[in-house]
Image 1 (cartoon, one colour):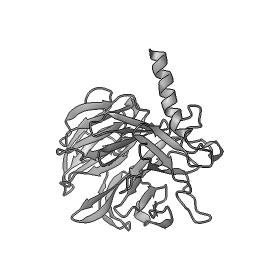
Image 2 (image 1 turned 180 degrees about the horizontal axis):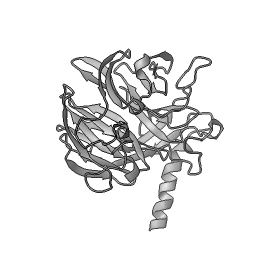
Image 3 (image 1 turned 45 degrees about the vertical axis):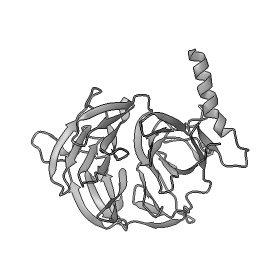
Image 4 (image 1 turned 90 degrees about the vertical axis):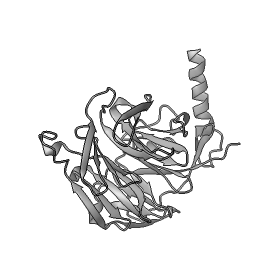
Length: 329
């Protein structure tokens, strides 16, 4: 039975990628979660490169896509055309979200190298900054240990900061940036993390919750908005690093070279970019070893307003891919 299940899984994974001819864009995924590569995305001016990537992606309501590189955030139009770099306050961004507040969209960024999180206008102008860890006696004996990897904001303005590369702690601030509480800590038990790499406010249900990518424990966890543990959603992920939601669909980007899709009930829908098994993976995978549609090391991802999925990879040569959903036949 185990052997039959394994062979069936391989066929399901390889089938979509082989269902189109060589001159058509690659497809990846299974069942109701099949996506097709958009070739030529993004389009960069001559001489400009993405460079080594270790950040995140976000999309605004106009379909513009933001990619964080080392020096700055790059902005691309819905057609993939390069538009601009944002200002000097946008370097070193590791985690990023676009969120609407009072009718205006803003970028919320975590800059782990600068040990700060910030709110920016979409043109890169800084609105506010939370520099350093919470000022709680004894929490950080060495403030240099604080390395925030992600940030998200709830509908009521509450701010959630993931100290993924530091103490594996989650910090909560109110809408006025006043410190509220901390939860988590290093470990693999209930209420603990081993690199809480990404935090995402889940609004797919009437009562919002927090989804936290517990990277080195290879799991995705659910918490209530006060930081109380709710459940383990998945334990078979490959170093989950990023997550985003479109409608009822949740996408989780994995450093192990894959995107996993879940439905509204957090049931598995599909896995993208996982074929073939012997593809080049990781930061050092060179462009001549990349396979269209197959993922190398997903570190950031986002959906756009039309449901297209974008994956940015931890790769020294700079790789970002756009996928569009394929209607079920």
